[in-house]
Amino acid sequence: STITVAVFVGSLRKESINRRLAKAIEKLAPSSLAFEPVEIGDLPLYTQEFDGSYPSQGQRLKDQVKAADALLFVTPEYNRSIPGVLKNAIDIGSRPWGTNSFAGKRAAVIGASPGAIGSALAQQHLRNVLSYLDVDTLPQPEVFVQFKEGLVEADGTITSDGTRTFLQGFVDRFAAWVGATR
Ligand code: FNR
Image 1 (tube, rainbow, N blue to C red):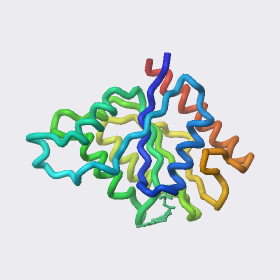
Image 2: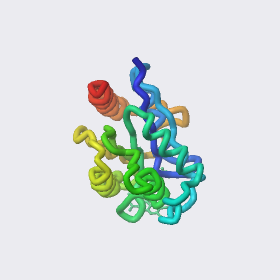
Image 3: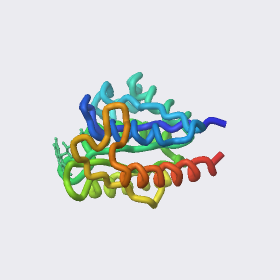
Image 4: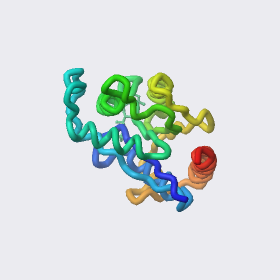
C-alpha cells in the first residue's frame, strides 16, 4: 500500500537548492512512497494566543502531518541553525499543548548548502527539536549535500554519478525504514 511522506522544505525561495534536492529524492524513490509538499510559506507567525482558536493554515498543517505516514525534512542552514520559517512551522504543528501532531512519526533530515559542511549544524539542531517532539529520525546515512551549480537540475535530475548513487542509498534506507511502520 502507499506510504505518504509529508515533505518540509525549509526554504521559501523559488530557486531553492533544497527544493531541488527534495525533487531529486522523489525521483529516486519507489512508487509506493507518495510525497506531499507541506506549505509553510503562508503560515502566520506563531503566538500562544493561537492555542485558544487555531488559524486555518495551522490546522491544515496539523491535519496533513497527522495523516502522513512519515516525514521528510530538507533544510538549508541559516546562521548555523534551521531557518525561522521552518521552526515556525514546527512550532505550529506542535501546539496547542497536548495536540502535538508530530508525535510518534518517523522522519528523515537532509539538506544542502553551497558551503563545505553542507547544512550539518542545522540538521543537528533539527534532530534535537524533533526528538523533543517524539519524532524518530533516521540516524544513518546522514546527507550533507555540498551543492555546486548544476549538481541537480530543476526537474530533480542529478548530474553526478557519485551523488546519485549516494542519494539512492539514502532513499532505499528511508523507504525500508518507513515501510516497516505499516
Ligand atoms: C545562509 N547560508 C548559510 N549556509 C551555511 O552552510 N551555513 C550557514 O550558517 C548559512 N547561513 C545563512 C544565513 C542566511 C540568512 C542566508 C540567506 C544564507 C547560505 C545558504 O546555505 C544558501 O543561501 C542556500 O542556497 C540556501 O538554501 P536554499 O534557499 O537554496 O534552499
